[in-house]
Image (cartoon, rainbow, N blue to C red; front, side, top):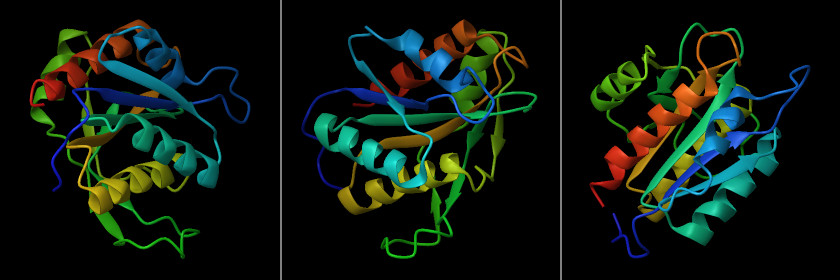
Length: 183
């Protein structure tokens, strides 16, 4: 891994609304982090290639120590921290392994979400939609560049399904701050 050299910043991303959803729960939570001194946020388009490109541009611009990408899992009963990303089927030309592991421990996030009254679970399947593509793009970027040190993907239930955006935002902030202390 190359040495981290820019400072102790975190990048937290989420997606714009898509399909029949007027709100994207991931963005509704992440936007509440705006103004935090060590956290930068970015809203990604719901498009495989454009989302991966926007993520890469934000990573290169900020060189964060921590990157947590978030997405909405419509109908999911609770938030889930993804452990693995599979190479998206449409990404034939990108160099990289078929499966990449997230770099985010699960123990502390479980406690931090519980502090907000939320039950977090781990998952081995980020899906085949833009969330899966984005997670693989993040982890493949980390593999190629050696940073960010901490890289993960969090799925959030739909707004109103299982948790309020403010509680999710508080848990995300705590997760990111926990990883930033390792900077």
